[in-house]
Every structure is written in C-alpha cells, then in structure tokens.
Image 1: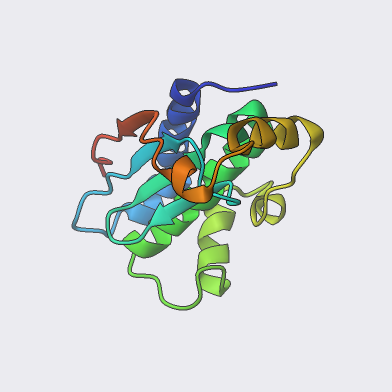
Image 2: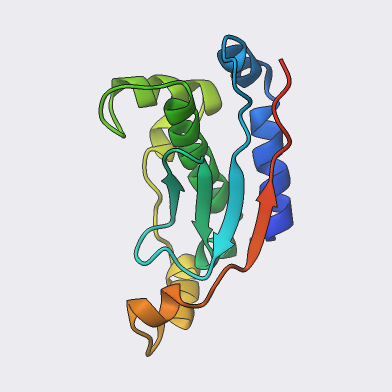
Length: 152
C-alpha cells in the first residue's frame, strides 16, 4: 500500500511529538525544526538527512510502500535527532542506535535498513528508466514541509 507525502509528513510530526522524543529533546536550548522533503530520487538511497539543518529527504519511489517509507522516516529522524543533540560517533554507531530505539522502540532493528520488494523495485525502475543520476537529481523538489519548533 502506498502513502502520500502529506501523510508521511503527518507521521513524522507524530513521531516528533511522542513523549519519549519530547523527553529526549527536553534539555536542548535550541528548537528542533527538521525539514521534510520528498525528492524524485536520492539515487540508490531510500532517503537521507543533511547534517546541520536537519533536512530529511525521502525518495519518491519509496512512497509506493507505506511501511518502508515510514521506516525510512524513523531512520532519518534518528539521524536528525543525533545531529541536533550533538551526537558523537559513527552515523550508524551506538549513539545513533540508542536514539533509533527511542524513535522506534519496536521496529528499531528493521529500521536500520530498508528492504526492497517488488512494489518498490517497480516504482524505482519507473523513475530511473533511461535517466542518468544527474537528470534524476535535476528533477527538483516534489513536496516540502517544515515542522514547527518542538515545544518542551
């Protein structure tokens, strides 16, 4: 089952408002305001997070599978929170995993990686067919949303 960019953004907002995430952010003095963007493609990646400005990008082809898209949002949100909290260590190291467990206490193991399936593969091929990576990235932004500052 697919998911819309707006529905995925609403899901991100729900995650950020979870009690455990709010508690994690409670000692921060600066507001946490990640930007959520659905791009035509992040190349072979399902998503990405830009360090320093907490921009979460999700490839549009991943929207073809709601479960995988939500998993990618949880994964990238953990990166954004890790960066916001001044996390040290590797991008997928112990500190990041500790935060992923807060964001996704039940599915954290699964959320460390996304899994391709026939639906995602079909959507990915449809977007990339006959295009170079440069042409794909030039496609511009599809949908962009900004969270309001998280209140403590």
